[in-house]
Each structure stands twice: as structure tokens, then as C-alpha cells.
Length: 98
Image (cartoon, rainbow, N blue to C red; front, side):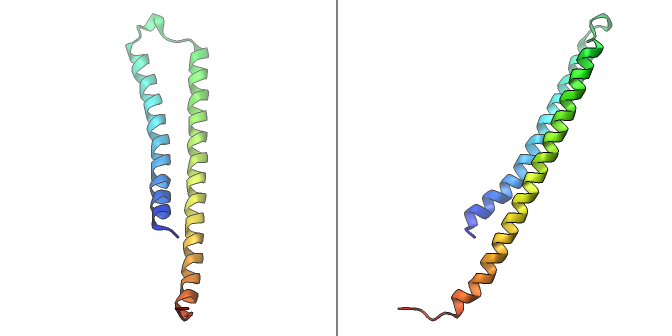
């Protein structure tokens, strides 16, 4: 396997889940800060709380799906590396055509 492709896959398998966790953290942090700055009378209604809860659940499920995608990418990279390692001895055992 091309080293550039392998390094790209490794970087993406770390970067994508990290970004999802970062986005989820920012969303939750904004929610906490926003709530703490509101006076008690201006607190959001139960409907807003339900919407935020659904948003958090959606972000969590997206994070799980992204993790599954990154796991499948790691698995595919591993399979390609194994296939490349198996085919390398065949090339080495062939005499040069020069």
C-alpha cells in the first residue's frame, strides 16, 4: 500500500472521531453557559430542553457512526497491508526481466 494513503487513513481515523467529540463538547458547553447566564424567569421552556436533548442524542449517534466508519477504514487498511505483504515475497522471488 502506498505510504501516503496509509498515513492519510491513519490521520483521518484519529481526526474524524476527535472532531465529533470536540463538536459535541462545544454544543454541551454552549448549552451550559447559555443556561447559566439567563435569569431564572427567562429560562428556556421544557420544549427547548427536549430539543436540546434530541440534539445531544443525534450528536451522540453521529459520533458512534463516525467511529464505526473509522473502524472499518482501519480494518480495510489492515487488509490491504496484509495483501500487500503477501504479494511482496512473490515479486521478490521473481527474477528481473532485464
